[in-house]
Amino acid sequence: MEKYSLAIRPSDEIVFKVKQVKSLLREESRTFFRSQNSEAHISIFEYEVGERQGRVIANTFSRLVPSLRPFVINYKGFNHFQNGDYYTFYIQLNALASNIIREYASIIKKECRFSLKNRCSIPHMSVGRHLNQNQLNIAYGLFKSFEQTDFCNSFVLRKFNPLRKQYDIIANMPLLGTDNSKGQLNLFS
Image: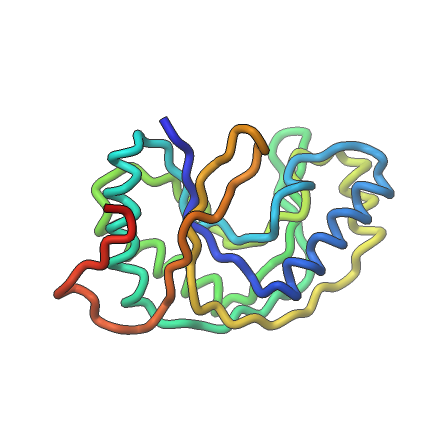
């Protein structure tokens, strides 16, 4: 079984800024946290399937994603989720972009016959996961705002690399706003 993720990769500029945020949080908290080495992204779905099923899902994505329209994402500061005694500190998105991402996820999930774990009920870009209370306090002390605008014109398909313990991008799927239902582009034949 292989682990995959459909996600949004922000611009190189934003990836760089998020890397700096993670690095400073790691330095100041002096403690490892989950996601500290992960490249900036917004998760849409995750799934675990065999290689053949992985190709079928990838081809479904490659047919559906081009029919979606590009859109603007405004990043609007920091927030967090709580899960038991731990927290996820993240960069939040504006409401319009969040709604578009959820709508696109719904369209894709409806067309895909495999089980996809929805990771975008509240679309966000994680800075650190599994933070303790002290790390969360440090994060809020360090970072007051994150105001950036990005243009999302593609989704990326990522595959988990067990050697690096990170996801690698294996395909970039453009959002074109076109009807691609008549012919399917097979990226993974």
